[in-house]
Image (tube, rainbow, N blue to C red):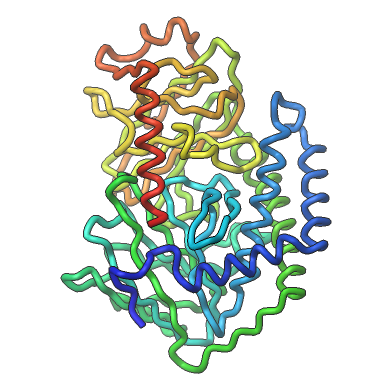
Length: 421
């Protein structure tokens, strides 16, 4: 069965089945107990002493475990299903679906995951939309994200390695044989999961591709049970919360002094996307301060700037301009982007809104950089008094009044909701 233009791209029958199972899982006592332990760990963390963190901690715990429930509900490699996760709460197909964001999730990305076995054979059938995503890739991973490891990809297939027909349709073969330059093939030796990423730049126009995975060497065998999946979700939710708080939040995002971004480095070394480079940090500002971050696109296919709360979770992108990629931010005449982080709206178009907070983390990503791109010194950051901000920004900086800001938010919400159609 091939995906087609009449079938929902994300609200597939497989997705809705996994969500129904996940909703059962998160109601179990074993999940309630695990969530209590994780919240207690968060509350004992040093960042819990920062201002106004209680709400963020509680939401983050809930979404960690709904993601874990989605994964546990879909970990049947002999009956594989592609599951959309790391997304905001939404209502569709008669279901109210909780959010599943964690791990500094990129709000530009459509993240989909499938469970596989390396000794089996699979086929992914897909269809690119006429206005396809800025970037697309499928990574083969040895473990779930954050499950005791960085989970560096064992193999990857990128947009440039996929041949599709004039109608956008394509097929990818997955097995344990070496790719050896073959197109539309992914070697899954050493892999247990697939991660599919569509990176959307223009939310209002670009669409994720339709995807379907099938086992091709035997019958589908679904061994799901609520009891087993609940135990698995409790374990997985606990492990990813522990890992991301200790290793990613404390040892990566808080490694540099507050309000300072180091030069970008390859994300592959950190277990991230092989074709991505990034710089990460954290900000701690006064109510009368702003942090101005300046960066060059460097010829990348995609650049995404985002602020995230201290509990590894994106701010609600439908209500706040907490991320602005290269298609959403306005560059200055020198070709560089200048983003402004502050608790109060400074009236700048490129304002990153952290739900009114002055504390959070920063992730700036480049995907598909050209060879020889100069990363060293490509990013600067400076703390400036809010009342002096206009004197530090270029004369061509675009400013928004309250009406224009509200329009920007409405357009952002409407554009985000396009991915639910």
